[in-house]
Amino acid sequence: METPDWKNLPFGYIRTDYNVRCQYKDGKWGKLEVSSSEYVQIHIAASGLHYGQEAFEGLKAYMCKDGKIRLFRWEENARRLMLSAEGIKMAPVPVDLFREAIFTAVSLNKKFVPPYGSGATLYIRPLLYGSGAEVGVKPSSEYTFIVFVTPVGPYFKGGVKPVDMLICRDVDRAAPLGTGIYKVGGNYAASLRAQIAAKEGGYSTAIFLDAKEKKYIDECGPANFFGIKGDTYVTPKSESILRSITNMSLISLAEKMGMKTERRRVPVEELSTFSEAGACGTAAVISPIRKIFDPEKNITYEFCKDGKPGDTTMRLYNKLVGIQNGDEPDDFGWMTEVK
Ligand SMILES: Cc1ncc(COP(=O)(O)O)c(C=O)c1O
Image (cartoon, rainbow, N blue to C red; front, top):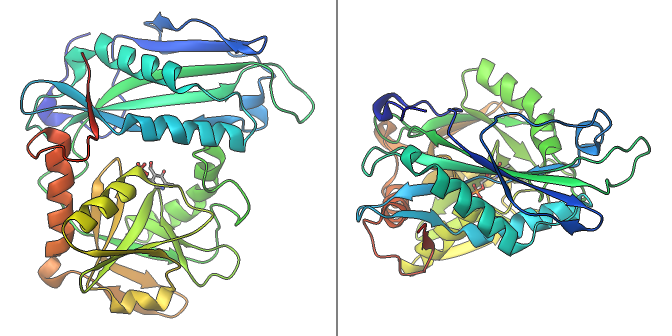
């Protein structure tokens, strides 16, 4: 395959040369295999197709300033995939196999890692699903683990732009004791009605509230929420949201910058007290929020003066992106070189 036109790279799927695959059978994982096909053969009764035994991860490889390719906090993704696997009774992928798979997938596709300074990155997608045939509802005895990569353009073309979001009360993406903390496909399918409705209303995404009381902020579509109040970084504590690795990292950076951090329940009304707010995740790092509309109360919460992202948001954003691109020292030891 030719290398893509880096300047016009979309935030979508582009074919690369290779992916890697591994099968779990008879109680153990087999050898990692390299494939150049974009397709899998799957049993028509696979539990991943029928009963939602499927989990995935998302992380990125960066071409750093010194010309070396590095991954950001991959061990956290390995850990989270194990948590997801345990949550829906799949065979967990051991950390060593996860490491071998992602590093092999990136190494074999080095020419697809976008250049330093382009804002584009190589997105890495590990995927695990039940591939054994089951008709009764029970965990599969066979699993398939795949890692593919695809170069993605910058989330915000032409610089970080604040977005508008819509509070959603008529759809829940996950139940309090359900699967919200796992990165499983079912949560994303469940979120689609709300996401489409938000988009149709001109919003970038829907904000989900806690499913039980509908009082507290849960997540912003596929990203965690944070608000800034004085010198405090506030982010929701909830049993039904994904433990964002970006959020974890922003908390560490905020503390290093001398800010206070709070992970606790965040009532919807508290939005009026934040000077800045944002959504954080691997895709965009931070999407600053311009305004949030609550249709039930007919209230609009506004966060950006002159439509510009706030100073604290941008300081955090620049610091994290700087570490990922190798412009800033990696004081936390978050980056691992791909040899
Ligand atoms: C539902 C959900 N919440 C939060 C996040 C952000 O997590 P991370 O920072 O690990 O990418 C994601 C994206 O991965 C997500 O899908």
